[in-house]
Length: 558
Image (cartoon, rainbow, N blue to C red):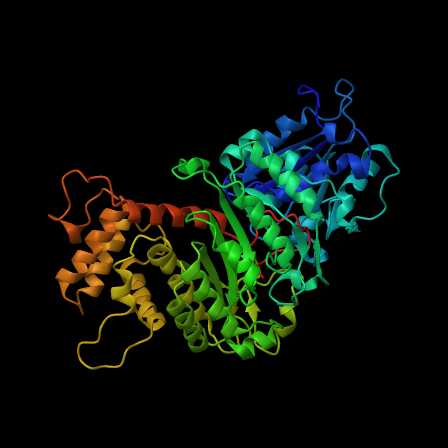
């Protein structure tokens, strides 16, 4: 497109963070010509923002992109603004559209994404729009643009997305810019859909999983790699469902591993979401070949409670799950990021605690503690009456209480989850955390479970701080010292905290460590620094359920 011309189509989304790059909108761009007619792609541009950017600032930038609007001089004609809408950006996107419509009522506003694919008649954002595409948008958006720009005008506001054979879709990876490759996560996929029916997830609505032709995918990934891409996040719901494909993808990346001592910025980093109870020998053999720092495996355990699993139609062999996690930890260098969800129908705090303790004993690198959210359209809604499920009316629709968990307990758990992120998943307290979770009883008393020990600390810390945010590493060091030294020898607690603080590379001066820190901190311990850095990188990959998913009808974790 001529850079001085006004675009006819602007595709927009508000990402959770700058580092995320919307794969879904790039699919729409890549398929404009194929499914809408030659020349459409040349008239389209992509604009990505973050949810932290003020709505008015987003609108000002969009208006500058769109140009002056219809007039005798401009003669731009119809202009379309398409928004990708997700559970984490719907509130901000609604305000952007409201302001944009005031400034330019002539614009055709088109919505797509999982948040607006269901319950469309109940949402303020859909009332503001001219058209809403539900489900898959790759083909339907292109056809809608053709109709809006060239006629005949569409008759329907709500347009069910057309699901084509995957062979009829252009892959979107050429839409990643050189800047994207250098500074952002690259989302890729080898398949869509999911054969499993876990009711908290929109993928439960899929009838099966569909695989792209693998040679075609690998050829596109090779081009990305040759352009300099080194971080690949696969958004496939079930990467290890089709082992033949999984093995070929892993072999592809094994053949492109950089030599030892390559700078960290040039190292490969791969993220896959895997089924926890399906790890056949061929896949194990491939996973074991990757060196440290390359693989992250996101494993959705969600609950070890068999009754809860049955209630939400989740098929999971818990013994196989545990055995596979232990094998991965013992025989691979993969970083294991394992998810648990609190608030599922019938899950009590005690049964969740039992599951947490079981998972903690296995020893994954991160345990992500989430609270159930009611994704629009997800089948979990069918349990609301029977299990007393009450959800927040505003995004992200977090469960407020259930028939077996009251509101106060859910609030306590929310604080615990935040503190767990700061203390455990941050990697900053590797030596101190065991003192909190596994203290040796000195009075012959029974050992309290790690979950309940952390819950007690969480309640104490909340009383002390009154906040779960803006807690510096130094404030956490002092809090841990005060709490632990009440029941453990202060010298032992201080020694662990000192080792952790130095290893993290922090350079302030916590009160608990006065007189113990060197005047100028030497280069921090490499192993500790590497752990903290690696943990941060892993969290960058998994801050939200499926950021900017290309599946306009799917979201949430499987």
